[in-house]
Length: 168
Image (cartoon, rainbow, N blue to C red; front, side, top):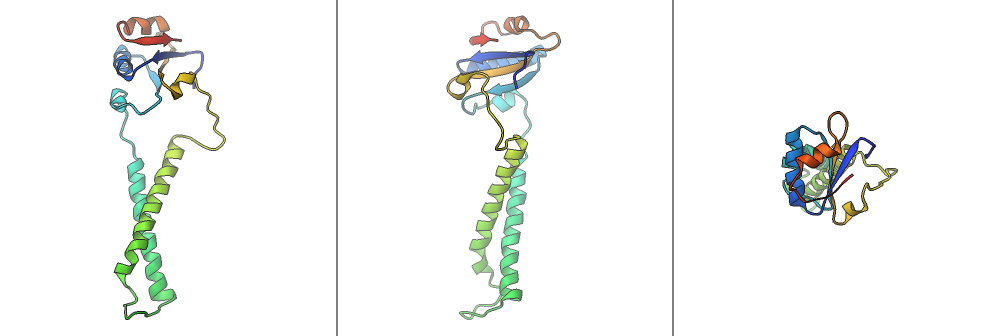
Protein backbone atom coordinates (compact mmCIF):
# COMPACT_ATOMS: atom_id res chain seq x y z
CA UNK A 1 0.00 0.00 0.00
CA UNK A 2 1.19 3.46 -0.81
CA UNK A 3 1.09 6.16 1.85
CA UNK A 4 2.56 9.64 2.28
CA UNK A 5 5.92 8.21 3.44
CA UNK A 6 6.38 5.97 0.40
CA UNK A 7 8.79 6.96 -2.36
CA UNK A 8 7.73 5.57 -5.75
CA UNK A 9 10.43 5.09 -8.38
CA UNK A 10 9.20 4.38 -11.93
CA UNK A 11 11.29 2.58 -14.59
CA UNK A 12 10.68 1.76 -18.25
CA UNK A 13 12.85 -1.39 -18.29
CA UNK A 14 13.75 -4.17 -15.87
CA UNK A 15 17.56 -3.92 -16.11
CA UNK A 16 17.78 -0.37 -14.69
CA UNK A 17 15.28 -1.43 -12.03
CA UNK A 18 17.52 -4.33 -10.94
CA UNK A 19 20.55 -1.99 -10.81
CA UNK A 20 18.55 0.52 -8.78
CA UNK A 21 17.41 -2.14 -6.31
CA UNK A 22 21.02 -3.13 -5.71
CA UNK A 23 22.07 0.50 -5.10
CA UNK A 24 19.05 1.23 -2.88
CA UNK A 25 19.76 -1.80 -0.71
CA UNK A 26 23.44 -0.81 -0.46
CA UNK A 27 22.41 2.67 0.70
CA UNK A 28 20.46 1.18 3.60
CA UNK A 29 16.97 2.25 2.49
CA UNK A 30 14.15 -0.25 2.94
CA UNK A 31 12.35 -1.49 -0.16
CA UNK A 32 8.68 -2.07 0.62
CA UNK A 33 7.62 -3.69 -2.64
CA UNK A 34 8.46 -4.02 -6.33
CA UNK A 35 5.63 -4.01 -8.89
CA UNK A 36 6.22 -5.35 -12.39
CA UNK A 37 3.93 -6.14 -15.34
CA UNK A 38 5.56 -9.58 -15.77
CA UNK A 39 7.92 -11.83 -13.79
CA UNK A 40 11.48 -10.51 -13.80
CA UNK A 41 14.33 -13.01 -13.75
CA UNK A 42 16.72 -12.29 -10.88
CA UNK A 43 14.36 -10.04 -8.91
CA UNK A 44 14.02 -12.48 -6.02
CA UNK A 45 17.83 -12.69 -5.78
CA UNK A 46 18.17 -8.89 -5.90
CA UNK A 47 15.66 -8.55 -3.07
CA UNK A 48 17.25 -11.45 -1.08
CA UNK A 49 13.91 -13.23 -0.90
CA UNK A 50 13.74 -16.66 0.68
CA UNK A 51 12.63 -19.64 -1.37
CA UNK A 52 8.88 -20.26 -1.18
CA UNK A 53 7.49 -23.14 0.87
CA UNK A 54 4.52 -23.61 -1.47
CA UNK A 55 6.17 -26.59 -3.26
CA UNK A 56 6.35 -28.37 0.12
CA UNK A 57 2.65 -27.69 0.64
CA UNK A 58 2.03 -29.24 -2.79
CA UNK A 59 4.17 -32.27 -1.94
CA UNK A 60 2.38 -32.97 1.33
CA UNK A 61 -1.03 -32.21 -0.20
CA UNK A 62 -0.28 -34.67 -3.02
CA UNK A 63 0.98 -37.27 -0.56
CA UNK A 64 -2.21 -36.90 1.48
CA UNK A 65 -4.38 -37.08 -1.66
CA UNK A 66 -2.59 -40.18 -2.95
CA UNK A 67 -2.88 -41.96 0.38
CA UNK A 68 -6.52 -40.93 0.68
CA UNK A 69 -7.35 -42.14 -2.84
CA UNK A 70 -5.55 -45.45 -2.42
CA UNK A 71 -6.91 -45.98 1.10
CA UNK A 72 -10.47 -45.29 0.03
CA UNK A 73 -10.27 -47.76 -2.84
CA UNK A 74 -8.62 -50.39 -0.67
CA UNK A 75 -11.31 -49.97 1.98
CA UNK A 76 -14.20 -50.07 -0.51
CA UNK A 77 -12.98 -53.13 -2.44
CA UNK A 78 -11.80 -55.19 0.55
CA UNK A 79 -14.03 -54.23 3.50
CA UNK A 80 -17.15 -52.31 2.54
CA UNK A 81 -18.17 -53.88 -0.77
CA UNK A 82 -15.92 -56.83 -1.64
CA UNK A 83 -16.74 -58.21 -5.06
CA UNK A 84 -14.70 -60.69 -7.03
CA UNK A 85 -14.95 -59.89 -10.72
CA UNK A 86 -12.81 -61.16 -13.53
CA UNK A 87 -10.90 -63.44 -11.15
CA UNK A 88 -8.97 -60.47 -9.67
CA UNK A 89 -8.00 -60.40 -6.03
CA UNK A 90 -9.89 -57.99 -3.76
CA UNK A 91 -6.79 -55.82 -3.24
CA UNK A 92 -5.80 -55.33 -6.88
CA UNK A 93 -3.16 -52.60 -6.60
CA UNK A 94 -2.57 -52.06 -10.36
CA UNK A 95 -6.22 -51.17 -10.86
CA UNK A 96 -5.97 -48.55 -8.06
CA UNK A 97 -3.11 -46.60 -9.70
CA UNK A 98 -5.12 -44.28 -12.01
CA UNK A 99 -7.45 -43.03 -9.26
CA UNK A 100 -4.53 -42.73 -6.81
CA UNK A 101 -2.59 -40.66 -9.37
CA UNK A 102 -5.55 -38.38 -10.07
CA UNK A 103 -6.19 -37.81 -6.35
CA UNK A 104 -2.50 -36.98 -5.89
CA UNK A 105 -2.60 -34.35 -8.64
CA UNK A 106 -5.93 -32.92 -7.47
CA UNK A 107 -4.89 -32.51 -3.85
CA UNK A 108 -1.42 -31.15 -4.74
CA UNK A 109 -2.89 -28.54 -7.06
CA UNK A 110 -5.67 -27.46 -4.72
CA UNK A 111 -3.36 -27.27 -1.71
CA UNK A 112 -0.82 -25.13 -3.61
CA UNK A 113 -3.55 -22.81 -4.92
CA UNK A 114 -4.98 -22.47 -1.41
CA UNK A 115 -1.54 -21.84 0.11
CA UNK A 116 -0.85 -19.17 -2.53
CA UNK A 117 -4.13 -17.38 -1.83
CA UNK A 118 -3.55 -17.48 1.93
CA UNK A 119 0.08 -16.33 1.66
CA UNK A 120 -0.85 -13.50 -0.73
CA UNK A 121 -3.79 -12.48 1.47
CA UNK A 122 -6.06 -12.62 -1.59
CA UNK A 123 -9.77 -13.03 -1.06
CA UNK A 124 -12.89 -12.26 -3.09
CA UNK A 125 -13.54 -8.88 -1.45
CA UNK A 126 -9.96 -7.60 -2.02
CA UNK A 127 -10.03 -4.40 -4.09
CA UNK A 128 -7.04 -3.55 -6.29
CA UNK A 129 -6.24 0.09 -6.81
CA UNK A 130 -3.06 0.45 -8.86
CA UNK A 131 -0.53 3.01 -7.68
CA UNK A 132 0.30 3.72 -11.32
CA UNK A 133 -1.84 2.44 -14.22
CA UNK A 134 1.32 1.55 -16.13
CA UNK A 135 2.23 -1.36 -13.82
CA UNK A 136 -0.30 -3.55 -15.57
CA UNK A 137 1.17 -2.69 -18.97
CA UNK A 138 4.78 -1.51 -19.22
CA UNK A 139 5.99 0.26 -16.05
CA UNK A 140 8.22 -1.09 -13.27
CA UNK A 141 7.79 0.43 -9.80
CA UNK A 142 9.99 0.23 -6.73
CA UNK A 143 8.36 1.39 -3.50
CA UNK A 144 10.84 2.62 -0.90
CA UNK A 145 10.07 3.47 2.72
CA UNK A 146 10.51 7.24 3.05
CA UNK A 147 10.56 7.42 6.85
CA UNK A 148 13.63 8.27 8.87
CA UNK A 149 16.63 9.66 6.99
CA UNK A 150 15.47 8.35 3.60
CA UNK A 151 14.14 11.06 1.31
CA UNK A 152 13.41 11.39 -2.40
CA UNK A 153 16.52 13.60 -2.80
CA UNK A 154 18.72 10.96 -1.14
CA UNK A 155 17.29 8.27 -3.43
CA UNK A 156 17.89 10.50 -6.49
CA UNK A 157 21.52 10.98 -5.47
CA UNK A 158 21.99 7.23 -4.98
CA UNK A 159 20.47 6.42 -8.38
CA UNK A 160 22.48 8.85 -10.51
CA UNK A 161 23.15 7.40 -13.96
CA UNK A 162 20.34 4.82 -13.87
CA UNK A 163 17.40 5.19 -16.28
CA UNK A 164 14.70 6.43 -13.93
CA UNK A 165 11.50 7.67 -15.52
CA UNK A 166 10.03 9.35 -12.45
CA UNK A 167 10.34 9.61 -8.66
CA UNK A 168 7.23 10.50 -6.66
